[in-house]
Amino acid sequence: MGWGWVIVQVALFVGYGYTLVATPSGEWGVWRWLGVPLLGAGALIGLLAVAQHGTKLTPLPEPNPSLGLLHRGVYQHIRHPMYLGVLLMAFGGALLSQKVWGLVFALALTVFFNLKAREEERRLVRTYPDYTTYQQRTGRFLPRWNKDA
Image 1 (cartoon, rainbow, N blue to C red):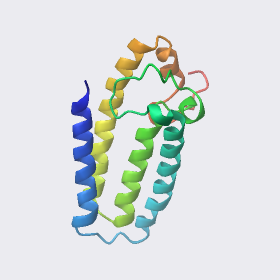
Image 2: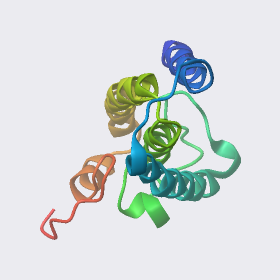
Image 3: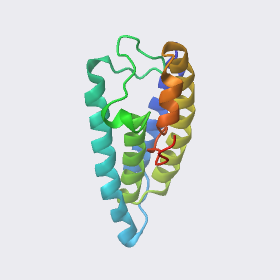
Image 4: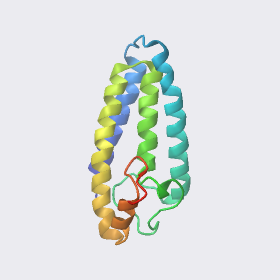
C-alpha cells in the first residue's frame, strides 16, 4: 500500500539527478553560492530526522505504529523534517550547479512532498488520536512561530 508514492518519488529523484549531470549550467554569478547554506541546512535537518527515526524508517506514507508519534528533537517544531531536508538540498544543489532544470525538479519535488505529506497526515490522524493536537502546534515544513498555536 502506498508504493505509487515511492515510484513517483524515485522517478523525480532520478530526473533531478539526471539534470544535475546531463544538462548545461547557467552563469548565475554569486547567486550560485546560496546553494551552499541550503545544502548544509538540508543535510543537517535530514540527518537529525533520520537519526531520530532509527531503523524504523520507511519510504511509504503509511505510519509505522511501532515507532510511535515522534514529537521531540526536530519533530518538536516540524512535522516533516526529512522532506524539508531533501527539499533544501534539492534547491541547494540546483543553485550551486546553476541548473535551471534542477530548480524545475526541486519545485516538482516541493509539490510532490506537499501532496505526500497531506496523505501521510490523513493516515497519521487515524493511527494517533493526538496527531491533530500535534498538527496545531507544529508546521508541516517550517516551524510555527505563533506561540498561541
